[in-house]
Image (cartoon, rainbow, N blue to C red; front, side, top):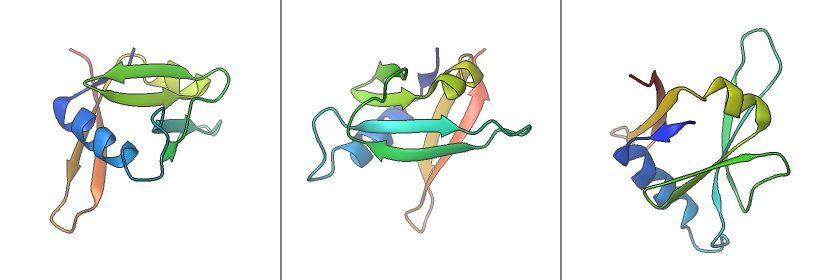
Length: 94
């Protein structure tokens, strides 16, 4: 199952605790079915049917079925660059 670093958990918490979002809000990761899968990340009010739910460090991440399979052995990390843009990175679990 996808794991989150402390940084990723903190940033996901910050993104999903914005005013107006439901308490169940999380970060949703989806992928398309292209030969070179691309991931899309967005804030979501709740899981979609079939989503895998990852809860770690107070953060909630929803993965569609394809993303859950592709990210099963990965670690999600996150950082904020000097301009304030959030950047996500993946690593293989050791």
